[in-house]
Image (tube, rainbow, N blue to C red; front, side):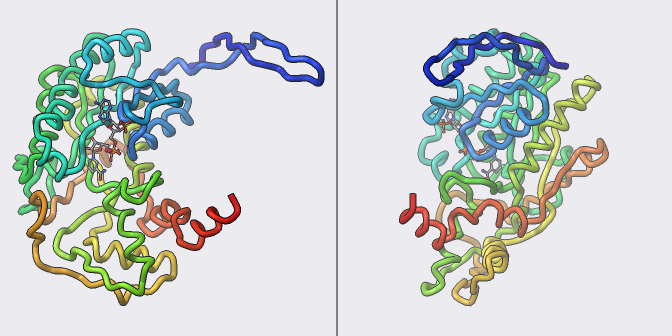
Length: 334
Ligand SMILES: NC(=O)c1ccc[n+]([C@@H]2O[C@H](COP(=O)([O-])OP(=O)(O)OC[C@H]3O[C@@H](n4cnc5c(N)ncnc54)[C@H](OP(=O)(O)O)[C@@H]3O)[C@@H](O)[C@H]2O)c1
């Protein structure tokens, strides 16, 4: 599965510096990851790269220097990277995923979540690449969980509607594609605001100030490393079995409100939680959210695909760099 390519390397020895041509191993399985600068895309990129895939990541505003800069709204740029790289698999993570931003900028969100997804699916079909389109549990209204892949979606907010339209655009343009619906994500973040789970950490840590926490919406926080592993396992199964396509669900299996997640975070770091206040009313501000959009994951489980990190383990691994104590030390010594 491994090809060989030449790479120029600079060799420094005392008194001289030489440019040397060396053989490097390049895995022959190629995966293109969109949104590779984002929360999920970073994990998907790493997962493929460390499992003997030649991975190329695309980003937009944060792309350089590590990733390719490709505006997915630019159809020529998308065509060029796919033709140049000829991926076997494309994992499409890029999207506008903040429900309140989608409500305020519906046209821009629809262009990225729907039109660009349909175009990517068409380009993938053109070279026979397997496309995995990342979708959301917000395609369901949350009134009758758990949801299987065959249940009828009924999104409550514009974000959920654009993700559902994106699913349809993908499957219309590429009958062999897969849609992977997932719930709220957490993982290694560049800043706490990157995830609806990690953003609670400062409220948990600043225990001298009481904090209201939603205790109405039932969530299933899911680690991006687990979703990344599921994407890779799905891609590898599909390489062996072309009948693997269509819609799939993946989710963590610990049901928690945001209040319960905040208490679990406090518990994981031995912090007090008495300043956290559960709010049991449905939220009145912001885009409407489904009460409980639990995803039934048995279709993937029956294929032998899956990975679940316990929430307390995964959240501790993700948040320790953001402990107030750690931030203080980083400021002083680095
Ligand atoms: N986060 C969640 O809790 C959650 C829950 C369920 C489903 N999902 C789905 O999971 C996927 C990944 O979400 P995420 O949280 O990783 O999102 P994210 O962190 O907000 O990342 C969004 C990505 O999209 C890229 N992007 C934005 N506009 C672009 C453009 N015009 N052209 C190319 N790339 C563009 C961004 O690139 P730059 O930053 O470089 O501009 C970034 O890499 C999305 O499909 C989302 O709907 C997420």
